[in-house]
Length: 434
Image (cartoon, rainbow, N blue to C red; front, side, top):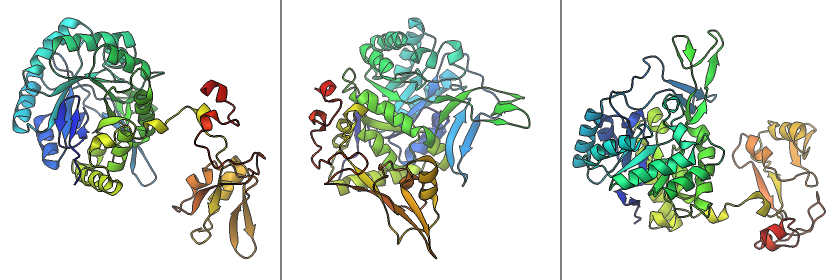
């Protein structure tokens, strides 16, 4: 038996899979459906001051599709909730009463004035919500009003508002970070300095999803005009993973609890975020594309994987990969791999040869003598992984570690013991490392 329950900054939930602040968490009806499906928690869609926000009535979403119409990226120009604050607060209170074992965190965004934060914090606290998330990430609409990412891009503002909130509420405070910044570590450090209990990231990325070349308008368009929106979905996951890892391994923010967000569709994606330091993960686009029941596979997949790997609790997984994230200068330049093609699996498409011949190292030969055949030239192969990446047959091309001898490309002796590469005499950055 494994225990996948979560205790994140004092907020308990039966599993680490939460719904992010977004359309799926905009009202009681949706949240109750989510909890019935098995989600461990929600971050209620961002609340603001009355009067309510007015959203566009035209298209709010745009999509980037793969060749099979699979949703790769999602763009939205929707603002924070356009439902009255009183209605949202009443529903939050009812949901928390009906589902006491689930996490209910409330996302907030008000003008950068302490009085405004004091006022809304008091009202949210009355609902019995488990915590708040400060939305410092929204890149469109609200940022033009001096909120959202306009705050999140200025570490001094992040620290200031976080401190206001910690001084004016008993609830745990999470700071939702914007990815639209040069170095995400700076606002994370500011959030910690302001006393925030944790951070969540990433929020959406500034984007224009495409252009209608007939109407010559950005998409989605409202009455002939469009604007930049927030980009999310599977395509942003690598960016989110890197930013989570940067905060997890930064000496100034090590130990700061992280809720990971960005393109999570499966249990495996969630575990990747956890391995890089996230205590919980938040999902939006996948739920909008496939419905709330995807959480069933996430929960069962996580349990099955933990059992197979011998983990019994989530805290054994969280951060497990962080020690293996390093800077380029500390990578082992004595480590050598070569591509290997399984001729039994090869379908003779030639993509590996074309990619390597035209754009890489000319390390794959193409032989046509009655039968097409592709083979690797060890002397030219640098183990770059391009052929593996473009091959349409899984496991047809693999990388094999060379454990002895001399690298034919560099003439350097291959050292099978690379555990102490940081201080290895062949490491050109040894002095810096030491």
